[in-house]
Length: 158
Image 1: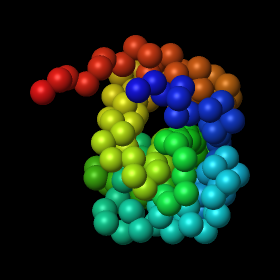
Image 2: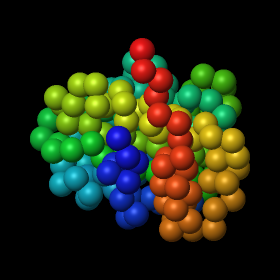
Image 3: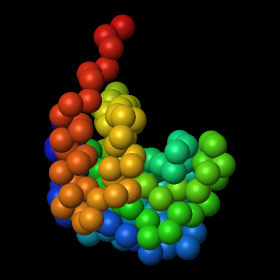
């Protein structure tokens, strides 16, 4: 799985100005709806329902909200830097300023988990978090993410 198959250049946003987790999810749903053609409310409700199961704030200022949607034809990823860190109820209780969203078709099965794993491996590469925070624009963010994803080690076979 290649991150460029999931993340389009116009699905990367720098400096999203939101004040809360709910507002962030609304803005993410708005962009995702425009890119996927699905109703914004459906996307928002799916992300919110997933958050109710437990925060997708994974630590180190990163959140990876995700969900499966009826009517979505392929896996789609979105990346946002936030203008100001927000409380995301993250595992480490640190505020979040980097958000990677993954939407999957309802029948995605293991591909959904593989994509989440790919995203996690990409952002865990040494220096990646600092580089994303220092990026000057969305174009640079996209270049960092796709170059890093190409270099991320493959998942270990079990």
